[in-house]
Image: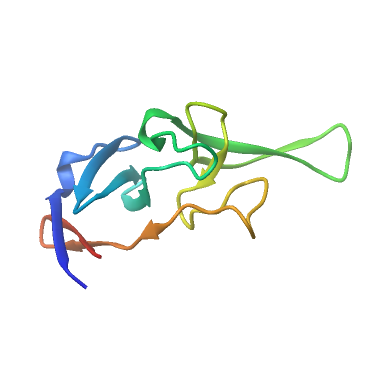
Length: 118
């Protein structure tokens, strides 16, 4: 595994994304509430760049037909083309978490640097 220094941690503001190239891979890094998440910048549906999408939560139906549960505010990245959504914590699709995922990477904070080992 190769150490890849991405940037300084303050270079990615809260709730924002930044794209990095590591060899031939495009990776989107997201800062949310002081945590950093990294995903392959490619939607498995038709290949859109996920960094062009939006971060928001997910609405799920509850057992009561009249209620909707809003969960994980700002922790789903929505594809800009067809709005497929991916949990930034684990890369799982909201609609088919077992079969549709985006590759994730662990982001390490080393001093002031954000680092990925890939």
